[in-house]
Length: 563
Ligand code: F6R
Image 1 (tube, rainbow, N blue to C red):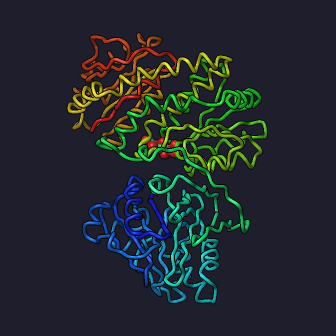
Image 2 (image 1 turned 90 degrees about the vertical axis):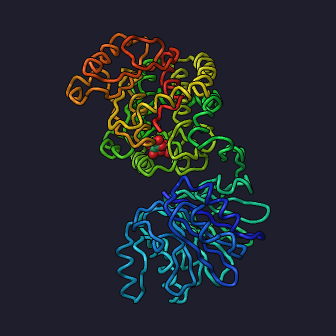
C-alpha cells in the first residue's frame, strides 16, 4: 500500500502536498517524494519517514502551483532513493506517482528496453512515464498518450502524472483507491479523503478505469467508455476526525471512538435494513465474504445469525471464494463486508459472483469505494475515517450492524437496536483511561514473550481469532487462537511455564472454557481471563460485563494489544 496526492490550483502546491502526505503516511512510510511544476519539473525524494525526508530535502521549498507526491511501502524494489517515487521518463519531461502493482511491468520494461529506453529503478512504476513518453514520441499528445499507456497495463493502479509542458495533472485508477477533491482554490486527487479534508469536503468518487484531466476544469473519462459524468458528493467527515488530536497515535484514538461508532453504525434507515432482510430470507445460499478482521466480524456474526435469526450463512475468505463459485447462481446472496471497500480479494469475489447472476449486498465504511460500485445494495458503517492500518472501530461497527440485521431478521429490530445502543456505557468504561492503564500494566508482563495463545468457545472463538490477529499485527508477537475444545488435540504440547493465554469467557460456556483454561494452567500457562466473573484460575482478570450475543462487541472494545 502506498499513498499518493496531487494538487493543481492557485496556491503553492508543495505545502498542500506535504500536509496531504502526512495524512497518508499510514499507507506507507519507508520513503517519499514530490514533484512540482514551475518552469520545469523539480523532484525531491528520499528514504525515511516523511518528516525525516523533509528535514533533508525541504519539500516546501519547491515552487509551483501544481504537483504530485507519494509515500511508499515498498513492493517492487528495495527501499532506496532510486526506487522511491516520483519516477521520471527518460526525456525528463514526465513524472508519475503510483499506488498498486503493474503485473506486466517486466514485459513492458523489456519492450521499452528494445526501443532504447533505460531504467534506473527496480520498480514496476518506472515503465509508466516511459510508456507515456514512447506514445508521445510517436506523435501523441500528453492526454492521449497517458490513456494509451494505461490501457497497456495489467494489474492495479492509481496514478498521477504531470508533464513539463502541460498545465494539467492526469489522475486515473484501476483497482487501487483514488478520489478527487474539488476545492475553492484548486483540485485534488488522493488515495484517501483525509489527505485533502483540510481544503474541501466536495468529493468525486472514481470508478475503475476512470481517467481525469485536472486543469482549470475537471474532465472525466473512462478508459473503456469514453467521456463519463461523475457526481460530486459532500462528505460529512469532520476534519478533526482525521487528525490525531491529543492522542498518542491513531490506534488509541480510534479505539476510543468506539463509544460513538457502534452507535452510528446502527443508525440506519429501518426500511432499508428490512429490505435487506427480505433479500436474505429470499436467498438460497448466503455467503459472507471478507478478509482479515472483517472476516472475523463475519465469522462472529454467523454465530449471531444462527442464534438470533436461525439463518445459516457460509463464511468465506475473499481469497478462498473462487473455490466456492460453482455453488453460485442467481438465487445466491453475497454479503461482502469491508472497511475500505477496496480489498482486492473481496472485489474479485464479488465480480465472480456477479458473473453468476448472484445478488451483492455490501457492508462498507468508505462511501464511493469500489465495493459500493459493484454492489446491488450497500449499508454504510458510518465509522468515519479509519487511519490506523489496524481495523479497530470498524470491527465493532461491523459487528454492531450485522447484529442489528440478525435481530431484524428475527422481527426484533427495535429490541436489537435498544440492546446495541445500551452498549455505549460499557464501551465507554472499557475504553477509559482506567482500563487502558490496567492493560498497559499487563502488557509490561507480556511484551517479551515469544508466543501467546487466545481461546474462546462459541461467539468468543472469533473474538479470540481477532485478538490474536491484533496482537500479531501491533506487537509482532506470535499469537494463535483456538476454539477452547481444540487445544487438547495437539497444541497443548506448546504450553510451557509462563506461556500466556487469554481466555474469553461468557456465561453460556463458562464451565467448559474454564476447564480448557485449567488444562493450560496445569501445564504452567499464565492465564488472563476476560469475562464477567473472576476465577481462581486467572493470574490476571479483566472484567467485562455479560452481554450475551453482543459479547464480541465489548470483548474487543478495549485495547487488547501488547506494546
Ligand atoms: C487487521 C486489518 C486487516 C483488514 C483486512 C480487510 O487489523 O486491518 O486484516 O481487516 O485487510 O480490509 P477491509 O476491511 O478494508 O476489506
